[in-house]
Structure formats: structure tokens, C-alpha cells
Length: 569
Image (cartoon, rainbow, N blue to C red):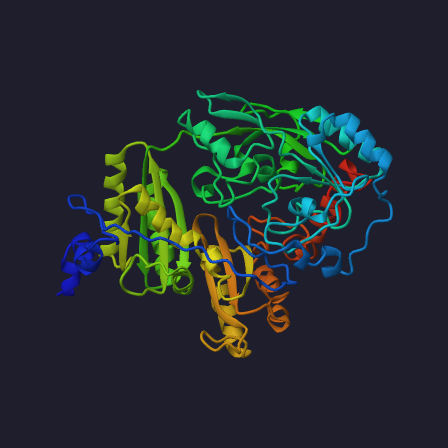
């Protein structure tokens, strides 16, 4: 005779098990004929002043809208943090004559921030010299803000002739130091190139300047019932050209794919000022080498993207979000397989979170978690479709199956936009929560799914064995090790939450983490890029032959090496 709980319909059992959440302020799960259990969670932002980290680990998974409040004077110059880096003697220092040339070329006081010929304070350069997490700090004294492709062309042509090094910069929300200068490179900021050039609501093709803010691009196509195929925490500040240049991944990749698939064409300016006009609006164009792919993820090292042509899908009118508790990582993989099988075309996100990550979020934010009991693993899934009734039927069938088969132990589904955002906060709030106790080491990695969580377990065992971790004792630098990420694209965020940055912790992590990933043919950078932080570790993910070929591409496009030097390769 089967256990009693297996004889109760799964969704009814779910409601019975979660009666407490039917009171005001928390979640109910929706069967086909009954109200959903619903949640209201209000995350509270926590900002902590942090010590300096000297590892390649980034400090966040996706940059949030607001940077932590740390004065620039407290940030070490990047050249001091990386003493082996020396300024390339080929590069000329910016002169008064150079500044005068750029003023004539750009023709507007608003287009230049001049600290070469004027007494301009360092605070005016802070947003251009420092990354948003205040880990990297350059020494730029000239910022140029061109408004047209022709102006970018003129700037680069002159810089190439004069051997003046440059750093292309968008919203400066990157996480690996790729968008800020190392020494005194000229910053070419694209914020004034912010116009939508065209949108075709039949094909869904958007053509826009690279300086358009991601959120504005999404809102623009949203007015035409379409969606921009990328979503990031930094969408209110990051720019779409820089998103392309860094091949940003984000939360919509499972449903809509990567930049390499969505970008139809690019307009780029090469280091010598040549304009590569490839703003194709065609989905099929099999005529020669697909050169635009070199600029997607090229991080501004072979040219500057000035405009993009991108395919934007139809916006979904029916969106559902569910949050589950599971008993093992094997159950998580089973749930993912069933979600792909049963939800198929409407599945838009499948996010993994371990129990430790949810506890950190709860402790740091004070927010109540959606589920009453504790579970070793949690998943958040999102469906997006065009027919509410159809999607609800599919979701309910999926829920009933995974619960009756004991793949999922417990779960909740949002029944309003507020509740939907509250469930997402349990996933998106982890990044900030990890920094609550003083510091955090974060790694953005791609691994084969069967081994994805093993790295978290092995890292936790390592710190338990070396005497550096304790959940409560302040004498130990490490508080906990947590793992979460995007199951849909095998992307793990490994976080080591610390009470302070510590050299012994750093020595334990690197290069051990990268060696672990390399042995399993993973990637040391799933979506953050290389920048300065991971330049020296590229050999853990790429062969010597591939690195040499990348070097040849760089030399071909940029023989003088002026584009974003000291980074990438």
C-alpha cells in the first residue's frame, strides 16, 4: 500500500502543507480550481563598506542599479594593485595639442571632460576611472563623448596616428575591470550616442545606437509589444553596445539565446578609423566570414561598436513564476528535465539556489522565505507565453507531476505582479546578501550540469578542512560557501561569503577553483568576460593554439595596440 501522502492529490497536499502561508503577507500555490498560495517579500538593501580584494573573483553576479558608497580616495590605483603591470612605453601622453584637436573635432563642451589643460578635480573623473564596485581605479585625465559614428571614427583615426591608448566605455557596469582605464588611457564614453534608429514591428528588428540604455531599449520595443532579448540587474545603467561587446548573458538566455544568435548586424569603428558598416536586418546572410561575431564579446579590444541591429521577440502576455523546494541536486536535475519536457516552448527561466544562499538572503535582508520548511535546494522557474489559460494548464500539469513523483517537495506560485517580483527577489537578492558580513569572493563559471554543484560542495569541504570557515565565530574569515545560478545554460555562481577579505582565503581559492573547472572542461567566465581580472587565467579555458589565434586577430585589427590595452589576452 502506498504511503498515505502519495494518495492525496499533489496540489491539494501542497495546500494542506502550507496553511500558514494563506494568512496575509505570504504565498499560496494554485491548483487548477483553487487560489494560489501567494507571497509578499520585501527585500531590504544592505550596503557594506568593504576591504580590498586582490583575486580575480568579481564582487557581484550582475551589477545592480546603484553602486556601493565608497569614496574613490579609498580605492587603490589598479596599477598599484597589479604591480607587475607597467605602462606601455609606445603610448604617448595626452598633450594640450591633442585636447585642442578633440575639441575642434567634437565641437561641444559637453563632449569633453578635460583634466589635461584645466584644473579638473579627481571627483569629476570618478565615474569614468572607477568600476561600479570600486575595485579598479584608473588615472584617465581626458574623457571624450562623441555623438556620431563619424566623430568616433575621427577620434580613433587620430589616436591611432598619435599612438594614444583608449578605453571604450558604456554604462561602466562591468564586473571584471574591462571598462575602466589602467593608467592614463583616454576614455571614449558612448552615452551621447543614444538614439533608436529604427524598429520594424513585423520582423521585430531594432536598430539603435550603442549608447542606448538597456531598460530604455526594452521599454521602447515594449510599446510595440516586443521584448529586448536580454535582462540584467544593471538594466537601468548599462548600454546595449557594451552588452554586445561583453556578450552579456543574463536571465533571458534560456528562452531567447545569446547575443551571438540575436545580433543581426553591427556598425563598428576600427582602430584606424575605418567604419565597418554591417547593420544587416537579415536573419540569413551566408556571404563570407561573419565578422560581427568577433566584436560580440571582444570587449572593445579590436574596435568600438557604434550601433547594433538585434532581433526582438514578441512580448509574452502570460507570465508565471513558481518557487520549489527539493531534497537533492539530483532532484533539481530531474525537475529541469521535466520542465523542458512538459513546459517546452513557454519555459523562460530555471534558476538554481542552494539552502545556504537562501539563508544568507534571509539573514541579510530580513525577508521571510516563501516556503515554511527547509530544503537543501530551491528552484525558481518562469514561464512566458501568449495564452494564460493554456499556460496555466501546462504549469499545473507540470506541478502535479513533479510533486506526485516526489521530485519536488514543496512549492509556491505567484498570483500577482508584486508576488512575482517577490519570488524573483529570493534569487536576485543573493548577490547583495553575500556581501552583508564584510566581503565576498564570487566566481562566474560554466560547468557540465551533472558536475555543476560538486564545485560548491568541494569548496565547502576545503574550507571546513583548512580551518578558515565557521558560520558563527567571528574569528574565522569565511562565513559560508553558497552556490546558485542558471540551470538553463549551466552557469554557476560560486560565492564565498566572508567577514573580511583575507590573503589565506585568496590563496586557497586561486588557482584551485580554475584548476577544478579546467579538469572538467568548464569555462572560468560564463558571462562576465575576461577584462583585467581574468586575463591571466584564460589558459584554464582556452588552448594555447586558440590563445595564439586570438592574439593574431588582435594584431591584425589593432597593430598599435591602442584599444583597451592591458586586458583580455
